[in-house]
Length: 305
Image (cartoon, rainbow, N blue to C red; front, side, top):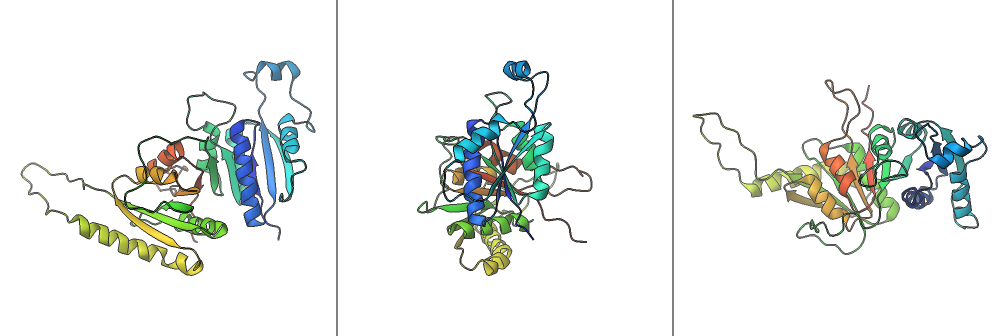
């Protein structure tokens, strides 16, 4: 059976060309083919020069020609094929995930407003695709935010970072993070955040709850994290995985860690009975908006029969 490709979505923008370079490296590491896809959207509200010339013939695509020229003569490339599709990118890009092992795109393309941190097409793909989606941001995003690196962490050497909710671990997200660290032969940093200070609500006349020991909460969180990681460590014994148990906002810690990480891995919410549509949690959205480096959004594993 053939290996599923790594798909790079391009539109000729600098953002998409940066994503293309990331996808080339990802395909090499996986010994997988690379598929370069351009979704052509020609509508009445398109650019004047496009309207004047009309849509190109099916065999013609200036964006793919640009990519072909960029790759011409380069050695060490994976097997590459080029695909042009006509339609709405927000609808067609997520569909590419059905036949890909990874979908890679820039944080913003040619459309939208310059002030947006994340384009609508990137958001739609990260929310709806059936495979992991990597969003590659513009250089310099996140720098100088004041978040810094979590206290007590070692920044030496490259690493992959992943968020872990010890109360509801996402096995698909952890598996992808371990796979990425193994492919890159670098460390894996697991950020397990716990809410602190705890929120307490009391009714009038109700006695306050006993004081919660922060040290005990941290110890329990670390113990649960070790249990969550055990099967993944067994599958990847060569990956050095370090656990950071930190108080406070998980999104803030992941964004801070992203300034020194090669990749941040986060999960996407599982469909729920009362919310059957695909959705992303607030932590994943915050990381996509503010992380300084590439972010992989991993869909949940299909439910077992």
